[in-house]
Structure formats: structure tokens, C-alpha cells
Length: 128
Image 1: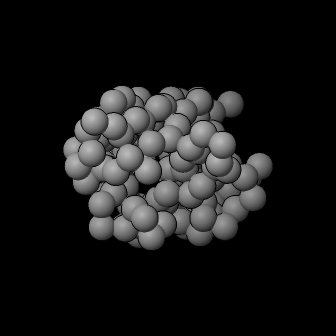
Image 2: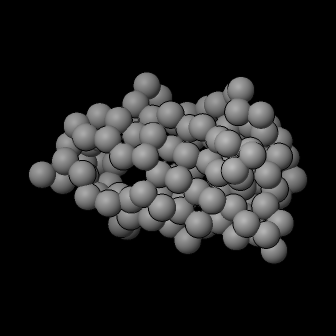
């Protein structure tokens, strides 16, 4: 059984930066696609960024494009999300996800949520 554990969340001022990390253990799908989602209070969980198995292909939602960077280290079995120029509307619980079956970022973006393994989430609050 895979376990995904996020870290790095916290309180940051608008315009600031944070880097989230996700460490996988167990049956870790180390060579599968991984991604980040977020869920703000009262809203549905939404896709943020995805990365393919090699780390050479990435995909972002429009609001993250140009501000966020997803990366991975397969040797350490980690995936990270560096977030710059943060805005109050980025406030949410951020979840790491791993595809159970695929290596392409499409296996994160287009997969039914039940096809993904999830972490427990880490809170990001952007506020002055």
C-alpha cells in the first residue's frame, strides 16, 4: 500500500513563496505520473499541476502557469510544488496525488479521482 505524505504548508503573505513536498513510501508508484490538487473551503478539489514519470513533461492549470513549478526526484521518491507570487485565492488544502496506472501527466489530469492515490493534504494560507 502506498502512502503519500505532504509537508511544507503554512502561512505566507501575498506575493510570497512556498515549496510543498510529497514523500512516497510503500508501493510508491515511483515511476508513475504525479500531481498536485487543492481544495478551498466550500469548493471542489481542483487540479493544479502534473508531471510525467521522467519529470520532463509538466502541465498546469491556468492559474498556476508561470507562478508554480512542479518537479520530482525519482531517486528520493518525492514530488515538489514550488509556488511563487502567491495570492489570497491560492489559500487551500493542497493534496499530492499519484497515478496507480499511468506515466503521463494525462493520467493525473484526466483520470477519475478514484484512480489516484492521495496524501492527507497540507494547508496553505495566503494572508497579510
